[in-house]
Image (cartoon, rainbow, N blue to C red):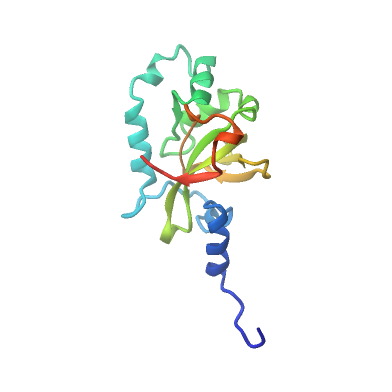
Length: 180
């Protein structure tokens, strides 16, 4: 309409977030050397601790951290890859030792912090891992439905795992709210 104000950046992002909760712009304001969020409303570090505690002992059961057992349990949802809170870390090395190129064949759940730091929320995204760059702390993730890969910084990731019940494109939504 003539004389109408242009929509603000927050309005545009809110509209886009209605279609998909994680936007690459979410992490742009984090800055270099950003770490996992610790706030009153969303705590990535606490969500990670809960996920680690839920699988306590499972990691010790693997014969080697780069074994095919880890890979197999990850893709079927028996095991969750949880980044450590410091970078680089043992979890980054574990992901680096997995055959990431094979993860492109499996629909996985990526539990991730969405939104700008002042108003974040946790969401579960479904799709495939296309890459992992431990040196930069970035994971390539292609949302379900054949969408182009987006880059998600590891400091925003709570966990990566398969879904025991829903394991193919036709069975999973693109995203859903995170439930601990």
